[in-house]
Image (cartoon, rainbow, N blue to C red; front, side):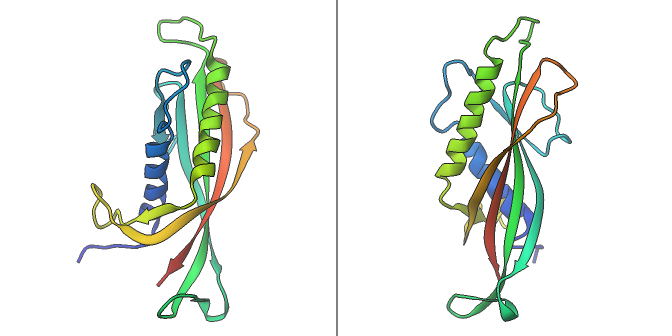
Amino acid sequence: MPFSADYGDVNVQGSFNKFFQDNITAYGLPSWITGVSVYFDFPDQGLTAFPSFSVVHMNKIQRNVAQGRIVRGTPMQSGMWNDGLVDISCWASTRRSGGAYNNSAMLQMRSMRDMVMNVMHSASGILIRNIYADTANPTSLRALIRIRDIEEMPTPTDPDPSIRRSRMLVSYYYLERW
């Protein structure tokens, strides 16, 4: 039998990423944005197109639920709370291909920030899917990722003066059962 971890990073982060990618443009794009790219695992995967989003999972903290790690359910199960943190950045460039100036870069970045906020606020629960079992059509594990907070972060100036960035930290949690 192949390895599987129901609440492992592959399933949890993969489910979050799939939700984000499927929903970030679900309501269309403003007229001043003709298309966007989504990059996962930045900076390992470099940005090659603008405007774009980068999604980077930062850490996970496991917390005991109660004495004996007993969680509600039938039958009674053990489990732990898991808190995660993901960095979602919006990127735009004042330079267009061919060297022309992009007057809409700041408007694009602000619109993309609104798109991220909209997607995260609309996420009442992101289904955790079993990507270990099937990458093409993963089934639900009947567990949810819940969005907790979205915090906009200050962003240092990029070494390339034509690049604009807006950065948000999104905290989430889920209950791991075993």
